[in-house]
Image 1: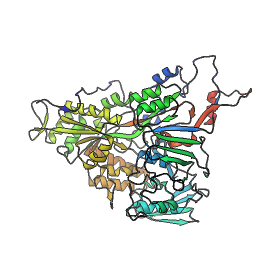
Image 2: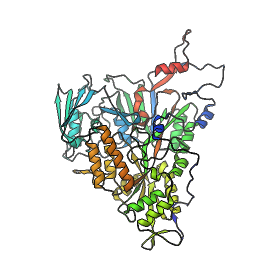
Image 3: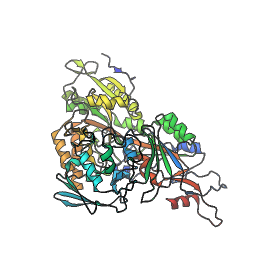
Image 4: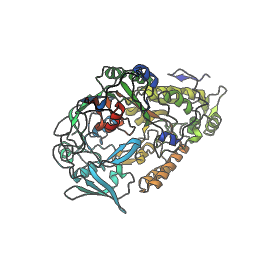
Length: 612
């Protein structure tokens, strides 16, 4: 019998570079992350070498560059892959990357997640947030006295109470329909939210401890507005009296799915943004994105997905800078444990031993970001401080171990070396998103490696919307490449590894493969309720070790981030913590010529350093 690969041409598996050494987790954490992924192309385009800090310098020893400083005013236009259709990102429909990015610019942020996926209290809005008791767990929030919505209504405990009542499960909207809630995690553990001090003090008491309490009350909606327009659909269209702001930006215009115009919030009490206006646009075509950056219509391009071609095009544009950082999206191979022979742990482990993760990373990811390496943890991306490599047994291909495990799982190799079960060749269905550049490249490589290991493979590339909208939820797959988002709050990943993670009518599970281990569920509950960070961290590592034994998914690598921006724009720093390049948009500034001064001796670099 001839082994077949349906839909993809068979190719030899990529080989590991024998001279490449695995970086340690600490080297990932300490390594400088603001890199140009194609520096050679960029330097060729600019025609000049670069300073150690990455800024361009003239190749002429006699040319004195103009003195540039961070200015104020003007408009910056940002190209994103998508613009949200609703700005209540707590609903099922609004729970998207685009929804969270835009919502974070206007709604209340108690804790902001910044570099390294580290939560940081937004003291402009909430002066303090402290656990004052552990039995029962009680958290007291002190709202800043000057904190006010852009329509003049103070931010008070009423906004916290509305968020809790809407997201704990079982609430009804203004029209009597059930509130659509993306997740009740944490909110369902709260017993009461009490107001005092004229609404400026909020006391939250939990009936069940929640170690990730800092994740609560993010993107807080204005209760006085939501109670009138409704939770489910009240924030689905532009209305100035509805889209009030509690941040430095105010939405001036919004065409759902197309663009958002942000202007300075005149009632903002903190440091004002440097730009007058920022325009966020949906630019779905890589060619259009490169063209818009090239003609300077767009100053920042922050694609959620990208490939070598887009990087090359953007990096070759004169006066354009690029950054790439280790990312938070972990690409994992998911096993559907409801389908034989994948219902056998031994078979899943045997398949994992047959996949060359090193070859995939060195061939696919490292040419674009040379710090990318295997992800050896199901819960943490390898730039996070909590990351620990628990998958060392699967670092390299081990066909001998893999074959023994496959045989242990009941498979038999026929005379041609093809794996069979009950005398019938085993055909593995492998599904991936064809419009996700990472999956589109990795999918055929994994399929080819499985063929090399003795399996017949049905390759099934589908659109991303089809994958997440029907294929994964219906369980109509055997193997699938699935992106999993690392988070500052690991309890949020419990639903990825528990088919029974439900609360009332709200399903929290995204465990598409049907894996469910009561021991793992219990460990997630234990970690979430443990207020000792060290003890909870140790429990999460135990969970990951158990997942390597059970192998419901096989982590491959964390996809890097990428952003390109005009050299005339100061302050852009990409970050993998959900908001990407927009996480410090308040600090962006146009670079302008400094006023002429005969006595000025400050260099360009010095002036920029002072502006920072």
